[in-house]
Length: 87
Image (cartoon, rainbow, N blue to C red):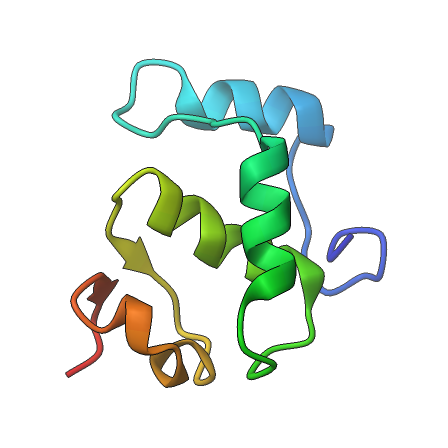
C-alpha cells in the first residue's frame, strides 16, 4: 500500500520482493489466523491502523520480539518486553 501511494519504492513487484527478502534469511512470513484477527480487534484502541494491530497480535500470538519505529506501540502494555529499540 505504501508503494501504491508513492511513499515507498521497491525495485521489484511486491510478490517477488517478498520472496527475495525472505529466501535464505531468518525472516519468516506467518499467516494471519482467525485467532490473530480476533485478538487484533480486541486490542485497546491505542492504534486504529488495522495492519499495525495485526502485527501486534501476531507478535503476541507467536511469542515474538517486535521491531518498529511506531511511537504508539509502546502504549500496549502487553508489548513491554517484546519491543526492540524502545526502553
